[in-house]
Each structure stands twice: as C-alpha cells, then as structure tokens.
Length: 186
Image: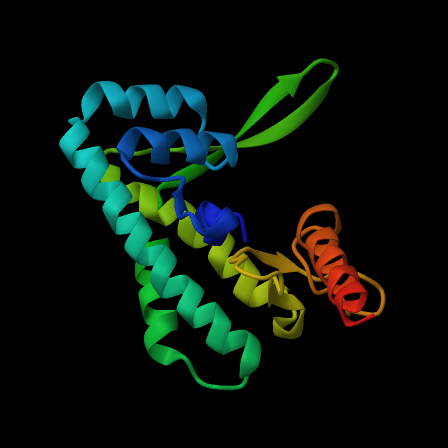
C-alpha cells in the first residue's frame, strides 16, 4: 500500500514522492526494501539518467498497479492473467539472497539484494504487490473516502467499516464538514 501512496493530492496539490532516481532510492530505503549500502552502491555505479529512468518506470508501474488493485478490490474473481504475467515479469527482476547474521546473542535472517542494474529495482516493489494480492482480502483494500484524498489503506478494523486513511486527518475533516453543513441548515 505504501508504494501506491507515493503520489497523493493533499488540498488538491499533487505530491510526487518518487520524482527522480535519487528520491526513488531514498523511498526504497525508507520502505526497508533496499539496504542503505545497496542504495549508495547503486548511486556510485549508475548514472543519474539511468536512475531517473528507473523512477519513471516505477511511476508507470504504480499507475498500472493502482488501476489493477482498484479493479481487483471490486471484482476479485476476474482472471487478471495479463496483470499476473506482468507482475511475475517484475518479480523476476529481483535478485536477492538470504543471509544469517548474529544479532547480539541471537541469530537473524536478513535479505540482501544483488543489484547490477537500476531496472532491477522494480523487482523490489513487485514483491510487496504480490504479497498484497496473495495475502489480503480484496474487500479490505480501500481508497480513502475523504474529499480529494487519493490514499489507499487496508481496513483492519473489526467491522471493516473504515472509510478514511486517517481518522485524525480525513475523518476529522469529514466530521467538521458535516457539522458545518448541519449548522448552515439551521
């Protein structure tokens, strides 16, 4: 869901989180999909033009994924074979390996990426999309009902009646607008 929310429109102004290659790398690190050392290595090895092209491709994937997830959440039984093939092609771009490391007195498994080309970064965003499609109930994938809000969320409430990405932001704005409307009618 975080990847879908890398573009949003607060107060009607479009905000693009992955505007260029460097911001895409920063987002991947912040989302814990890429280790900071791998991001630094890619910045050293690749031209900014190549990284910018990758960010442009990531924005295209986001648009495609958002449209697909919107259709999927409304009609989960449709075959979506073209979409699955495209997602599988993106998954093939990721070259990762697991490694056991000592973390104090215990052991932990960490995932490392073996990235040779910026286009392989698209494989990093494909895995969470695949997890969403295979592990989540499509009825719980929702777009915020707030006026002008474009954020997506998973409705994990008990009754599954959540409408807003945030009760404090969009939910509060809706309550204030409803209150003002009632006051105006009086």
